[in-house]
Amino acid sequence: MAAAETPAFLPEAVVYLGASVVLVPLFIRFKLGAVLGYLAAGIIIGPSLLGLVSEPEQVLKFAEFGIVLLLFVIGLELQPSRLWALRRDIFGLGAAQVILCGLALTGLVMAMTSFTWQAALVVGLPLGLSSTALVMQLLNERKIAGTAFGERSFSMLLFQDLAIVPLLTIVAALSRVPDPDALPGWQMAAMTVAALVFLVLVGRFLLPPVFRIIGTLGAREAFVAAALLSVLGSALLMASLGLSMALGAFVAGVMLAESPYRHALEADIEPFRGLLLGLFFVAIGMTLDLGVVRAQWALIITLVIGVMAVKTGVIFALARAFGTGTTRAFQMGLLLSQGGEFGFVLFAEAARGMLISASAAQLFGAVVTVSMAVTPLIFLLASRIRISEAAGAIPDGPETAGHDGGDRGRAIIVGGGRFGQVVAQMLAARGVGVTTIDLDAELIDVSRQFGVKVYYGDGRRTDILRAAGIENASLLVFAIDGAWDPAVTLGPIRNQWPELPILARAFDRMHLLALRHAGVETVVRETFESGIAMGREALGALGTPDELIDAIEGEFRRRDSERLDLQLCSDDPTTGSDTLIRSALTFDPVALGEIPMEEA
Image (tube, rainbow, N blue to C red; front, top):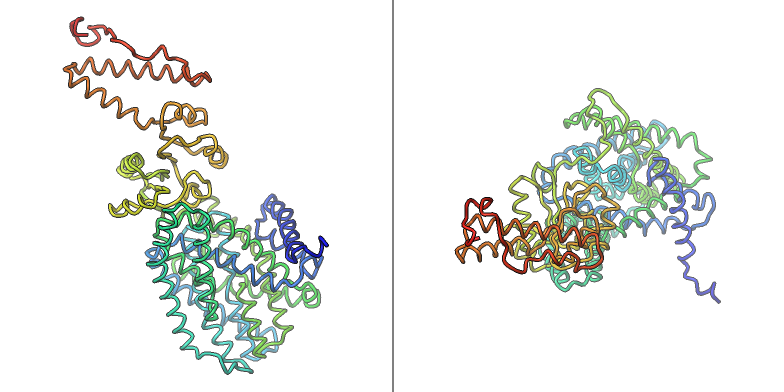
């Protein structure tokens, strides 16, 4: 009875997670990368080897949402102004890459097979596409997606997504069994433009108010649901038109890139993106038909080498023509030399149109899978290549092409209220780039009226901080109101970024002690300095000389510091209470500038 009630997906889900948990850390340990680990897991548990998971095509269809979420997150990090700055790379370099690689590979297929030019074209053009999911994952693993190298690579990938529509149109036009209900190419293009315009309008004018309302209510589960709805809704719209779901999600992300909710959206989407993208690579590994590989291994290896060599050469030449250095251009060619996930879709369409046989579709599907499997290794080698310029290699650490703020480092301020605003302005005056995070949606709206950008999110969460760019930050400032728990908040942050300097605002003396015990050396009590300032004004109003006011302030600070030191070494909060000032003090008149004793 218990076995009969077990959900059908549960055994396969356990197999998928088990294989990933075992193999991915193992591949990372040997510096082969997570992607290769997922691919290996898929090959092992797939139908061609252990057969623990059936119907990999169905898994792949579901796992494609990992690419959708990936493109949404990438869109969140690309503001429209930045996207406009990349237009030359997208529509110039990207278009040239799709056309030239597609035509060159068409010639390669004709040379190596007995295909007609029509069959060679519907195979060569898809082989000219690269894997967005694979390339972006590799770039993110090395933290170079935001570099000039990463952005130029992404520009080509983005145009490839745009090229899906014309490629599908070409396959349909050449089909030997044309669909009588198929739309004309111009009508399909018009619908694509209309859908993109609709997504732009929704992302610009509808989604931000929705997120603001949910943020004001503080309903985090509803916020996550709204984030997923915006991604899946845009994907559904594009899929209903037979277009790229990932492209729709990317547009929705770009439209929210300037929203104050972008960091919270990215943090909430990230766990789903990571799981589904991992499942996508596992599914790619499962689709590899080892029977086809065994039967035609020599042809497959030859095709893989030929495809990757042709694409490397074409992309190298194009990148050089667009101003990329020799080393980076060669590395870019190697990085984008594999086949892409959309190849499976186009090969299937070509088989349905009787342009190629089903066995040919399996053959070239195996070529794409094998090329994807070897790419992480090639990328690893590419990072060590030197050709002519010493600075041309793929960097080993983070290198940003540009970020929020100035040229004197970056600071993340958690808390955008009165206290945080003062800190932010003083840092900005020094040229420090500031990212401010707050949970108060109304405060965010008011700040925008004054031209100050505050992002929505709980800055005590490590995922929010990561989305805000803490890896590239030089300072973290907690300016939150109230006595939050330092031990709970700062433990995970210290574990992940142990060298990052942290400053904190203390609600009161007991909160200051808790912050110091949590390892925060620089703590400022929110009312301490203002209380001292008011005390000075009160003494001045009573006619106290400035020298005596300075002396009283100095003595008060000395005693307060002494009491803090005693309290830090004791569990009793009343420790050091004898240092409190309860009566008039007598000062040395010589030290005060010959003030008469009676005045002192």
